[in-house]
Image 1 (cartoon, rainbow, N blue to C red):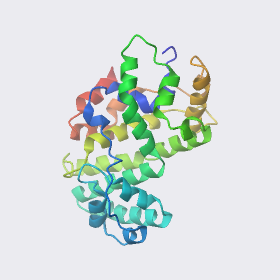
Image 2: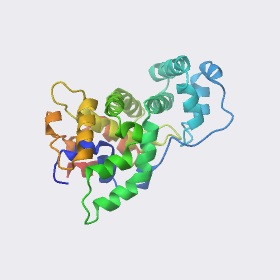
Image 3: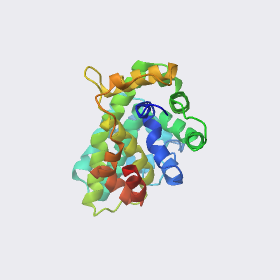
Image 4: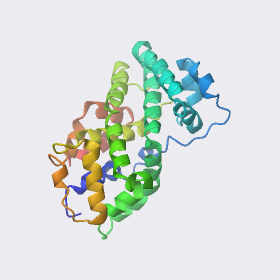
Length: 272
């Protein structure tokens, strides 16, 4: 690709392209349906242990039905998050990890990240093939493959999504801290490899530096819109600097998560 700033348009692909070949990172944690879930009203009454059991967070595959029920009602979502946060604050490190991981999944689904992750999982093979071929990987290829129409064709929606994704950095950091507090040991059953992938995407958004007057989401959405129409569009005006992707290899939270997943070598590849 001619412009180094195409990395901004490819924010949801670039990390995965670095990690091509690692099946564990391409796992889909969002779509394991679980029938017979309780109603939203019943879910509000559950304690953390029951929430974790119903969600399936420690079984390696989260119940999409459960998550969708939680986020379908604002009061239920808020009560569940409050209950889980109590365990994050006062539970054992293992209990806190499971609760924090579930908080992250709920928030991801609430901003629509499950749809983007589905697209990413489906498209990563295609994008990797293009990237390793003699064909030029154009921004439009990445945008069309990864972003659902409601984001790719609506800059306001895309900007909101990106800004919401960036806002999950604290949740990623908290989970890493709980793993550190447990001497680097991950709670049984957590799909830490998939969590590491999600964390890498969140942290990538965090290092984007928008130009004055733009939020991170607005800068990226504007760049995406321009690059959809012209592969050689100059999108540097939306950003204060080129993203320092190599810096992600030194991020403390990512180091904790990737080491816990046995994938530290992949993170080190970002250093070049």
